[in-house]
Image 1 (cartoon, rainbow, N blue to C red):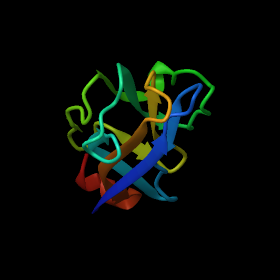
Image 2: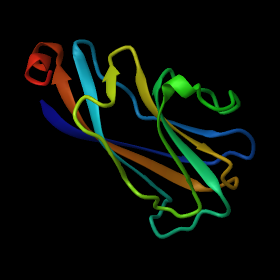
Image 3: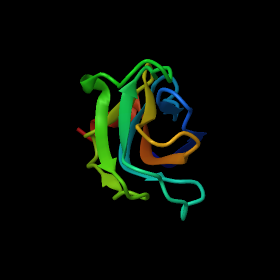
Image 4: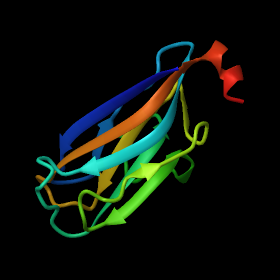
Length: 133
């Protein structure tokens, strides 16, 4: 097991959603997500109005594809405060396989809003998983 962190950045478009693709594991690996944080960029910048953040596992949407399918959403934060509270999970609660991506969707934020999603995870080889389960 190797502890890792990945971050993605973007700016809210004038129409649609901001989709931040955080990638996925390589073949024969899995990611076990342990912690996520969503920030404005720079961290002390304020979001204008209400917004929603979805953390998802699956194939990333395009900016005009609407909201993610409920089956792909693993974290949801409706908030007017950035940073919102961090989310944490136990080992094995959110598993990203090599065929999937981890991605964040920012919805209903003001156009031009800068956004950062950071996720900490454990990267495991398939042959190590018997230690977990």
